[in-house]
Length: 349
Ligand code: SF4
Image (tube, rainbow, N blue to C red):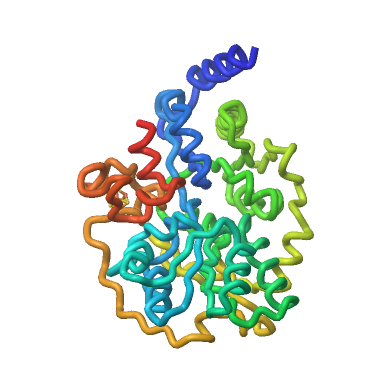
């Protein structure tokens, strides 16, 4: 029964009478992987293309973050991070390499695990706070917990990013987009109103779930809106996303973090697109707590991850794709992360 419905949706998508030259963007790395894994990109009507956006947190973090973490690791600080970040190359090294050279670098599943490392070891412990609105509330909760439990040897090296300012920057650039497949998990926190600026700029958006049926129905909704000239944001993931988002998570976030200008790989510095610790939590800021000296990072030669993240090229257009840069020997972050476009193209094409 479910298979029949999927086939019907796939046939409807394939046969949709779309205008040639229509380009949508899927913002979220989890969508990128789900679309590639299910082969949904091959079901798009002729002339319609889906490009990937800046929705992989590992990919958009600048090289300097890894350089800073490596510099701290060399000072004897315990570095804790989600596993993906350990393989990301900085300008000269990666955290995996620093670990192999004897640094105390540990992969953790959550910021609370990092706090537990700090409590158990008594050593200065830094958590690499990377992610979007989805992971940021858990990191804010860990900061509150550190303060409540008076764990004074725990701090955060932050590179948290906010999705709506990045979308604003994208639609103000010269990439031609007809609409967005919007990220389900981020939307569960920020809600539908956070995207109304897209509709105001004449672009439809659909908040989508991650299984093939959810993605197919969301793409059909996008195509229909585009063809009819309807410019709205539709919540097509109502089982998980409330239109108003999650006020409680946003309140925890706002207690600990404030918006700040932030650098994105490929997009440069975007106003108020990152989160930094509020003055009341400055004691948890690793950049204030330690003297971190990094050398100016040379540009990464040959890697076009920045263009991939802006939807300007598909990964195979990078000269290193699946040659010098492969999932087992990545040159750029888009090949490291499980949510990176380059790794998704290699794994599922
Ligand atoms: S294939 Fe590798 S080198 Fe090329 S853009 Fe992707 S991550 Fe960068």
